[in-house]
Length: 273
Image (cartoon, rainbow, N blue to C red; front, side, top):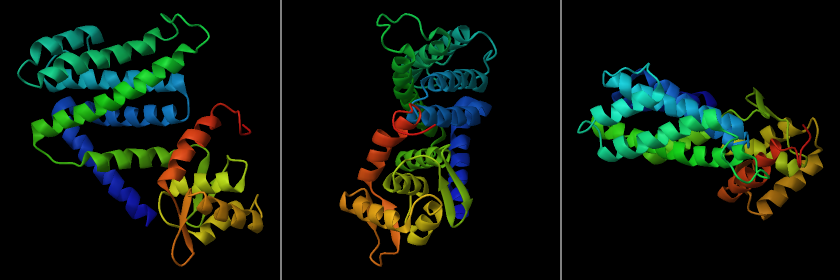
């Protein structure tokens, strides 16, 4: 089932790449890959990595556009961007050409100018820049795909794409490892409930009770796991199937994971390194 799910997502990513090639040519795959990386590192509070991949993401957009429309895409990025703004009038939407290209270039500049031009030295400037990078690049990805869809007259659901990207990030969490179909190791999280939530967040589907026990019994007792499942269900963080044999993380549980657990992993305030 997992293999079929991955195949479905891989095929959709290929479809997204094909659509993007209508606008950014062979840079489409780099564009997607860098977006996935920056989102993953942002979730983990790895701010400098977020900025780095945001710069690469933005560069792939600008150079890809230039290559697609026959401009000198290997020149200095500022010149490439300026040439695009002059040459693409009437060929792509004016708002995309005038506004989003400037946003992309400014995000690219953050990679080279981080740690400067910030007044409050008590705040890590990478934190501020990473928040800006994440917000800007999320918009750039969405708008680039919309413009590509408009030009190609193709049709892909944006909500489905968002789900796929989120799923990919979950699958690449560095503190979870799938050993077999019936065993997934969770290396972070102190309590049984935290480990169960991380495991269910990773699977993102109804998960057999047996898999949960096999995955956690190497460090948590059966009683601790049973109690944790009951607490998670009572708090609305997980749901239990009617037959009581499967569990799934709820939207409340996902929010709790993303806001209260995952972001702590890179800081080390709650978990052992």
